[in-house]
Image (cartoon, rainbow, N blue to C red):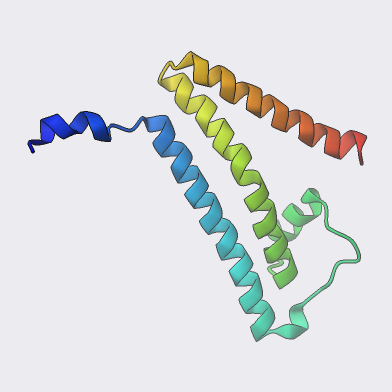
Length: 128
């Protein structure tokens, strides 16, 4: 079958491609951070520092920026990155559909992003 006939069946929008890339990259980065933490913990068990409570996002960022690559910090960073991946995916969808001028999906993605933002604000500030 000639290429020009089957092209219409294989066309994918750029927004879909970019959201797929964001999800893949997010999962790979997250898994890499967690695996690195596990490997460091296995090779250097004396570097394991157990937190008395879960670190805040600010504490985690400060530890990563200060060059403290202890295993627990790396594993927490991997988990946090994994939690932020769906949010990045929705932001990518809003921007991608906006570039494609698909306003219906921009609206739907924006509503989902607003719901995610409200849940984050509620969890941090109201529920504590």
